Length: 444
Ligand SMILES: [Zn+2]
Ligand SMILES: [Zn+2]
Image 1 (cartoon, rainbow, N blue to C red):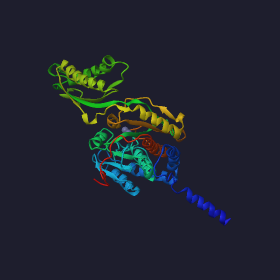
Image 2: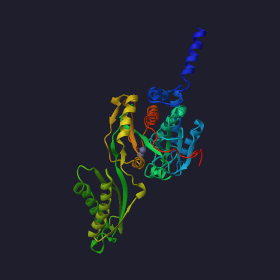
Image 3: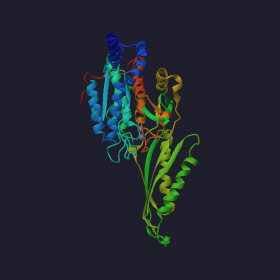
Image 4: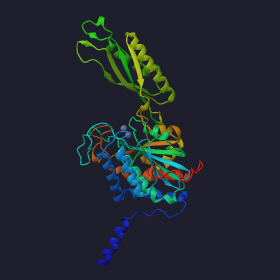
């Protein structure tokens, strides 16, 4: 009996050891075909899962807004240090760029965003946000945990990689254009392709969704101050009413999409802000309106932007008001475009891991993502990672104060990212010349 116990103990201990995936010094397609299914098993191991969950919960408790992700970034760097992964820091204030592999081409990137939202968490749970007015309500805490999970697997195979996997931890996705700043700082120099996931409450766990071509819209925000002449509401003849002017402006703006745009070219103009006046019997001096517009092509974006300005200023003048329009250029995102070949690659890799029936075609929507900055300059692929589980009850959609993440999704996200990158390297020969030796360091 004692002998059987010993055998059992050895078996248990062995099952908790890292899976020896390969010791082959140089990797070929066949070897990686063998490794990829192991990635999911590896990521599902309790100690790996618990580690990812622990990271996510720590970040969730201490949410940080765009360009303020100092503690999040510190935690990421501490984990990279523990894994022995070299990185650049700071990139775009709080961003971190890690490198796994040969340090030579080809380079393929995986991206996670780090920022939280300025809102109050209303979910009552052990790891609720400890920072008033800030919450991870879009799942970016989960994205960081899953990319670190992928990094762990990839680092175990660093000697097998035929190229370099670049880990992009970016700040300020939620309106701050962190991706643009990462680009400007050279985070994607020499990188041939980039992948990113976003957790989704729409698809079931184990299902992923994407589509070739545009997947999310080009987005921008605008604000207009409409100036009139305030006075007594009983004597409108002595005033120039900016409330009436703003109302007409808003109605006219709605004609841009319904009357000027091609009905088959999706566009949106929405006004979400209308501020003016404070008393029942006073016509105010000015009104401020603000809104967003979205399109699926650069041309429509330029055209719509120009018409919004014209309509606001000219329509305001009909009511004898002056209007000034400001476009928030820093929070303008281009169309998020998925490269066709990378989408095929995604379908193949995800299909092998999850089953082809679990790789579905996403419907494009008018939301925006600053991953668009990356996929504008190099081939990119953005996909949704389903995390819905009916038996655990419904999940609230992103940006809800009741938003929760189904942490069971972590192994899928980690393993898929690792697989997408390794398969990309094994199937794509170098395109660029090697960067100079020592061109990246532990700290910049
Ligand atoms: Zn969001
Ligand atoms: Zn998000």
